Length: 321
Image (cartoon, rainbow, N blue to C red; front, side, top):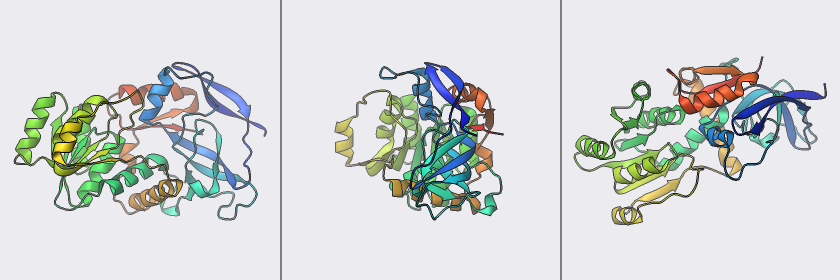
């Protein structure tokens, strides 16, 4: 076999399934036969087209939440073997095969069986949680409850914090409650949310606020909800242009601001390893979050569902039979 199927973004909103060359692992790399790949909210805007976009995109491009089975090794790889089931960190996984550096590949334990495991977003959640430095007894507001927000709600609750979940959809608030949130607030009116959080915290506001949406308003809201000396954690992926921040309020409150997207490969890998342990131990109910599945031929539909969030939606997977 010398070719494979891969999704190619050929124009804004248009994905074509193409037959492309099978990737060959270079020295220090492995090739993975994919079982599936998660769809990230960060896929939506590139899919729709951005001013700097060029077409066609790379085969399999935008897919960065893959898992599967190692099927070929490059030279100088001794830590993995063909047949190992793995999660990995690479960027062309809307395809039947992808390649990754061996040190960015993490073995999945037998305890996970054949369970889907989008390791990258789970690892991202673990790294955000670590950067947030959440402690028992704190009040933590999480703005935006999807896959990431739900995982963070569970981790914060497990750590002994009181979580206030803020999100638009009622079913997202239901999800937050299932994942441990003590309080939920509909995300409809800026000033009403502030007043409700004041009421819930006796005017103290929150020691930690995690912004998990990636838009201007949630960032403004996060600024308003963090208390004096607290920490604002930017977990949302802001990719649609510059932001304005209320530096006066940041300065006045004396808050720490953390951009929690890790770029150190060793830290990224550590997050995936911690996520595996959290799922195996039962800290995170992963199956409850993986709600929608699509074949590779319907990857565009999977991205649109991630944008539009049909009933019951938390996270879409593209799976390969």
